[in-house]
Length: 261
Length: 119
Image (cartoon, rainbow over all chains, first blue to last red; front, side, top):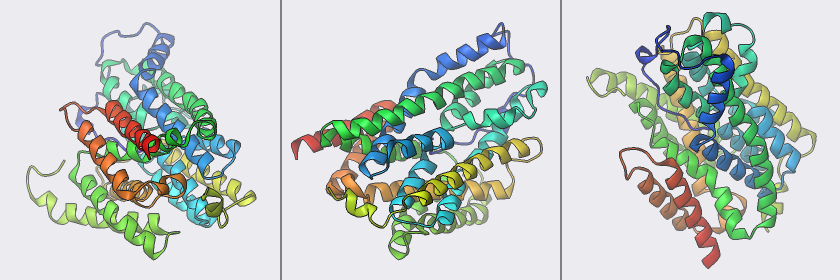
């Protein structure tokens, strides 16, 4: 997802060892609990976002296969929206791949914080398959719940959680695509608006000041660079605003005690 | 509808699918790198702080562009309506100490539908 990211969680809060009581009887039990935990508000928000993405694909003239495959193979809303936006404006394939990859760099930090919490026997090559299920939603819930789950059951829980989130994104995209063609324009307007609004709202949950400054500078530089050169504007505004935020943090904020988020 | 005009200079045909393959590989690459590094890397290192800041700035630039300078259907809504709805939705979001994503998202979406109905 989304997106949009969640605030970083203090690594010292991550319980690495068997700290939890017997919460699950078996990996099967953990898997289904993961599915149940996903089936509330998290899946609803993700579903709404994917419906919005499907509507966006339809209103911008893409076909249903392209729009749906995007959700299936990428499963990362900000990157998917970047792909559509840049394809509409006619950017080059290389520029698109580079920009999308950069928006996905948040997965590196998410994986690095989450996967060391799995049991040692689970930390093998199969994780290269499970990692596709990792998105903002499943990451945020896992980070919250893992300390209360035995290490040996965490992977099963995560897979249940992530699998539902991934699978629900496909019907969401298809539904949004066809709804946008059938419902009155007023409703389509609402559907198309879901994604930018969703990203905007998650910004209010970002805690570290370095990332808050990066968000604010990105809002300023984004439109400026878009006017200068729209093809490369996401890359350039991200690099410039992010680097300025990093140096503000490094040179000023870190010297003031109590400011660092 | 102006959507057909915006598609005139867009990527199409094979180029579009190659872009999707590139985007999918790039996204998976980041996930796989995360698995590879999860054994050894320190998430407090400088490069990660910088990468996170660049990522947030990019997502912000994208979001603000979708709201301020949209293409297609959303461009037919006056800019002050778009901004007003965003402000109201954020107001709902931060109105309680416990953040309320779903009510805020509903508020913004329904307001936009409401505008579409009365215009």
